[in-house]
Length: 480
Image (cartoon, rainbow, N blue to C red; front, top):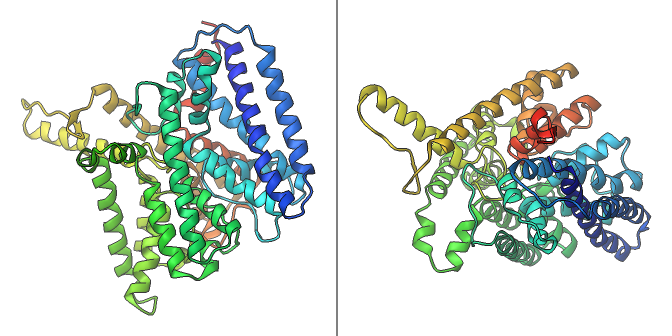
């Protein structure tokens, strides 16, 4: 393990985090707030980052998969640890663990919160909460890969470790160039949503915050009642559309921009995702039709919550914990399914679900026709057996860790529903669960141990297990 190079890359990323804190500090100053919490945070983060970067200038540039996965896992943990400092210094949080939980929830785009009242927070802190979503949505490491070539380093292994989904690919041959293209699309869609929300009646501050939270599929709102506080069907529809847009693989947008529309529309994962969304909306609309004045209201609320859950954004416009059991069960299933690979959403990803389905279909077919040779395909191309094996392994690890962490959280002695859905919603990066941690609840009442476990679950889900598991691998810490 090339620890010196890992430390140098980590230091560069912490310096980048210190720079990002300047924006919320300036926002707070525009509203007449003290910059002290951010100044202290920037000073500490920059000092540690500078020390790591300059202390290992002569590091060997040998950088392979092991270093890539190890670096990604370490950076995400440290990003949360130092990103929690503004919350710690602002005086609105009771404990550093609460600050860490809130920050990890932001950077992993989960949106689970320990706050019981949002509106009283300073504007700069509110902006930092939403900005962590935006930074974490496209991936902190995606931005880092655009900077690594300036150090003379290849970013291919960071891309492999950071990119969500069973199949990793670049838009263009150069990884850094791919990162810049992704961020351009990401920024363009974010600004477009800001404009639409402003036209719909939001003020500029709320429009920027909700757009950043939507773009990162995070779900932190500037209101305690989330999007429901605005009571505007137009705002709900706008956010619904953009939640779905940010749930789509960004390579689809690249294909559309470059004129390859037919190729984009042939995506198996995109069609599967849209079918699941349509099915869930129709079933839930039918199931809750008697709870609201008209079917159109039921349809709008169902569409918003389905888009919010499957995109793993976590905004709410209705207390779905009071919906019929069928609707709640369907939403929990959507938490597992998640968005498309290559999007800012979480969950297992639709491509993995599709691969698992087609693999099971192949196994059933092989029983009926033992001599038949059936190939599992995605987008018309045969998948390597290694990819199929990795997908199956990911599914097993996902379920196994979900239940293991549920046992630990179960020590708090909350209801079975609260315990299980708190882990599911965190490892899938959704935000709200059911019961105590439901759409009108929060995670404040959980113990410090449970908050740490759930923070771990959020990072696991965001990085899709392997980079974090590498941190606990004995072979990763060996020198050879």
